[in-house]
Length: 476
Image (cartoon, rainbow, N blue to C red; front, top):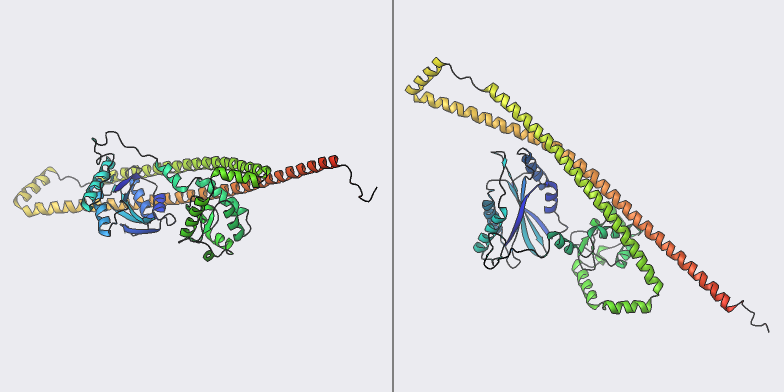
């Protein structure tokens, strides 16, 4: 059983990731200690973290058992319970989400790190050791095969060297996506969409580019690349709304398209029957003129150069957007620190003003004598003082909640405005890139056509010079 995770911020991104239905066959929220959805819940938990002057108010963990074992709901609950105890997060609000992908199930658990009672963050020190201790306990309890680890589950006699992963997480994700990067693929599909005037034309253009248009289980249309990887068609067209895409593809009946399984099987069968690269190159040389192959390479080189430049511009925009987000977080943190400091100063002044005056010497002596004689009088005084302390603590907690709620609302509005603006800038840049790629390819194709026409005219002129003027066959 694999357990991995750590402390983090970014509540919006985390909630969106956990609720993604395009990359998972099934998403189910098993548990949520909040009446709100995950987006609002995680934002509230992260906002509470600002009262501690911390930055990572969430703890996110992924629990993934071996594919050979099918877990029951009771076992999932037990896994969360054991891990929560090992991490020292008992009593903290949490949310549990199950994902099912490729027939396998795993769960994500998110805890609130802020302890309301102490207004401090629960420690995340030595969390990797806690992960492996929980994993080992669960494997022993459920009877799963032992999976070696790097820390608590590591047998140093059998594993003298620290184990390293063969590929990084980013490299694994890139391999999952296929040979082409997601930015290049989106730019290519968007260019094909922009150059098509109807759904059938777009379908034909996708097929010419090596994609297969298929009927998705949850979406209207998906495309499969040459590696049989499935991609949502709508997500490949930034800035194109689902309603607009459905209207554009109205002439393509989804029922006439293959399902994902059928399309994947067809792609793999075609790959098995495809001739070797050397033979394919020989066949192309024999059947196609050299000029056509050169022209194709010329267009592809231009496309690659334009896409590379576009990728650099997108990367630059991403860095700028990241700096804007960091700057906004810094401003919000400074504002929260200022508000907390002002509240603390006001609370100190109020405590001094409301502190009851100590009785004078004679009155204090009389109270001591009276309470010595009458134990009930002393008990009543202590009860009254305890009640006053509880009332003060309750008032303080209410004020903190009101202050945090106000900060949360203001910060949420600022973040939403920033995300909307950045999203529009992103969509505008992708639209500009698609138009630029389309225009440059069309210009290059026109240039190639003019070069061919010029070359053909030159050959015709040379041919006429060799053959001489035409003669009337009846002339003698």
